[in-house]
Image (cartoon, rainbow, N blue to C red; front, top):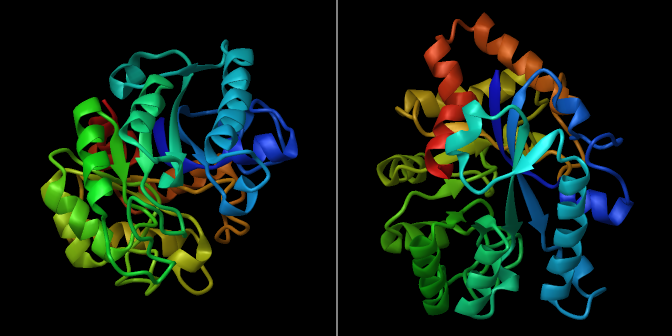
Length: 302
């Protein structure tokens, strides 16, 4: 089965724990993807706690970027680095798209161009900290998308970079929706109606995402799923979005290697086999399985 996972933090762990992409003790590796043809969005996460160890946010980004791209080159017989998902189904290798999580790196429009030249496809506007682009949901700050943030979203639209609104405050979400002329990604968030966590999105937000043509990736982190989270809990979120008419607007954004816990029944990337089995047990049509597993994400990443 083809599979797209819209968010994992493996580049962060690889750099700080000095491990490889092919085989490691993390939640994700090329070896753990065996049995699937994958396209993964690998996030270069700008951790505020780590940024102070570098001379600047840019030097932090460059260090993680250089480390990860060297690993991609080292494993070129297994994986190819792409910016366009259109060739995904015809590829004979696993595929990687690079993203940046945290807009604190962006201090000018030229920095957006820099990322684009570095083959960054997606920018998550905020992490848990607000920045000069927008306010984040977990910060509790008010204000939404700044004037500069609007300029950045416009430049991203023009270049073909996707704005990712996971971690963004509710106000930032609505502000981006009012200015973007391209579909957006909500790479790793769930349904607030099922689990009332601020990192999840409301039904109204999801309906707007559908109008925008965007896609949401289901996050596997237990606090975003609900109490005593397991595979069935994960499907509660999937089926809630399906009930809202979201067949063409959901996929997966596991958050592997960015979380310290996983639902019962999910241990690492290989557990996608059990998720697929659950889809079949629930009598999902082949068409629906393909949409959730890869076609919806492929549409906005192509």
